[in-house]
Length: 226
Ligand code: BTN
Figure 1: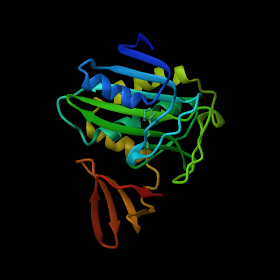
Figure 2: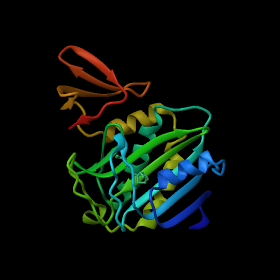
Figure 3: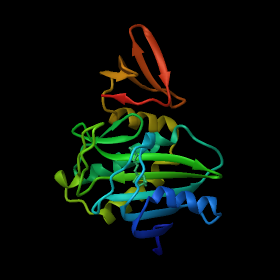
């Protein structure tokens, strides 16, 4: 384990650990967490995804968890994080899109996943970005950045930190506008709970708005297929 600083963050980096996310939780639960800490690993042996999925974590990709002290939970945070990641990729000439709520896609294939969890007075934002390898998974197609641009992990992380610092404190109307510009499947038919629905966007509270026939529905927690 190595502990240094990066921008104005405390950086804790490992060659290989089970999960940066789990390690971040351990820091919080043991009272050792500080605001603006980045946990980084070259590889993970027990990477965790959303819905209790495994996040396959071979060498060559970015595996990181950001720890921030918070006053209250923010259901709109995941949009700011998604925009921050997409904005990090744009200067590399990559054209990402965001699949609700915060998967990052290239050419319709998932290149990045985000896992946001809360513990005590902290939020832990886990971000995995495929750079050199992309796993084959049954649920969706995957991509890796190296097929689109010359990206190194440390440059990506430095740029990601700058982008998170811009987008996390941003007012929600600005985030909402940018998220909508980058959204995959907007005004198209998607599948939600086995039903076809039109993806309308996100509302002011951060709910996903779908239209089925003449009925508009709001959802926070489900998955959609595009
Ligand atoms: C998803 O299912 O889309 C979210 C994947 C989140 C993976 C990252 S990799 C770094 C951090 N550590 C983990 O164990 N998970 C997150």
